[in-house]
View 1: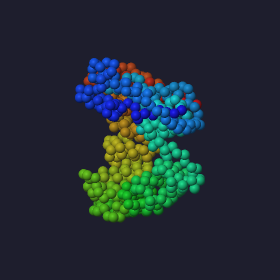
View 2: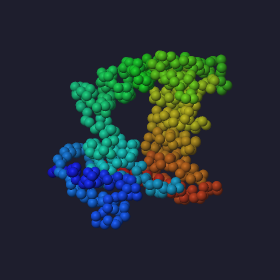
View 3: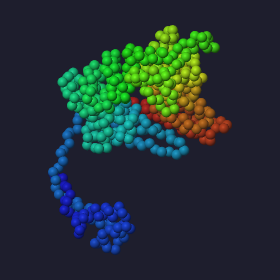
View 4: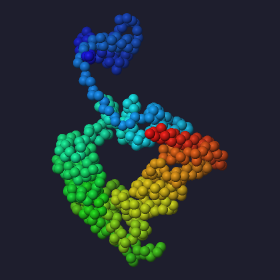
Length: 550
């Protein structure tokens, strides 16, 4: 069947100008500045009405003057999704989650109803864990949700499967799915087929090559590195940077020779990334060079014993220049605005030096003992901050523990953690159970005012001790008479991260408490409402998991 196209000869005015364009111009200028053509059926009508009448008549005329044309090519059939179908109850629940839109409520009140859109990421994670296929009828709403929320995209596109990519090629608004999917949805060759792998590497699109590298790096790291090296000299700087970044996965000493070559790259960003990767290999030559440089900056002064226990003091002599060899090894010479050059260079050297350097240099002391040493001339914060970055880069749990200190310490984070962001990064190097235990101790001592960022690195669902610490702290805040929206961030995390089995234990918090003196007016009622929403959300999460259970 043929599709119609407009007849280019239809609907012209007396002077050859298209009537439709004349009407559009009149609408844009306004009928008070340009008089529309009079209506033949009602010449006395007001100008705006006459314009609309003329537009309606011209629309009919244009449609009647369409010519037949060749029909468009029918799209290929959508691919099959071999995964198991979603249970009926779970499919209904998905429709409800996708239909929910976050409302805007005044005065900080959210009511007792759960925020369904905030439960969608968790629902998707569970559905993907069970390898369910998305219902075809849900795909448009799922893609719309992922288009509006980038944090949903990985899980949503995994759940949507191959049909989402098929739809994305037909709808411009969903093209993000092609960009967000490694290789744009292209099927990679079998990794054992060396000829096809090399052909895709040499001829494929950039996204396909990145996807190929990622797959190879997971199963054959040396092959991925060899591919990158084979075309390195002809690649663009931004592509070299992306390809080099792919070597983070399964990084080993075998990658060192190639990374050493990349230290001489034309691009500063490529050189910096190569240096960062080499410094994450404690046995690399670059790490050894950095150890020598950093060690030369820190000395032990046995004559200046601290008053606490007669232990030596550390003295710091920061570099006086950033020479060419330092720059080649990734040290950035130009300091940020407001930062001293010498302290800037010193921090980079310490960050890149293997942490074992300091135990060897400081008499075999443990990380806790080293961190406890006094540092002269106000260099302590600079030195400890660099050790923090090194512990995170090298994923060294022993140093992270030392720098974090005990969660009940008065400084709330240890001598080396200079910010909440640093503490969160250090915690991320610990095992999930130890991480949760530390954050629970921190909350028990310091409350919730600084806990939000730390809670964000804890595994979900929260462990029982961490969950109890959060709930107890919320209960204390309620008894203090403050409004609950001061803790809305933590309350939102609790709704998503508390173990659903904790719901029954929270029933005692649903009653409106007696308001203490100096309490904020009505705070008790607001707290009861917030805890009711928390309990309702936890029970709903339990239901979601049950509906998805095969």
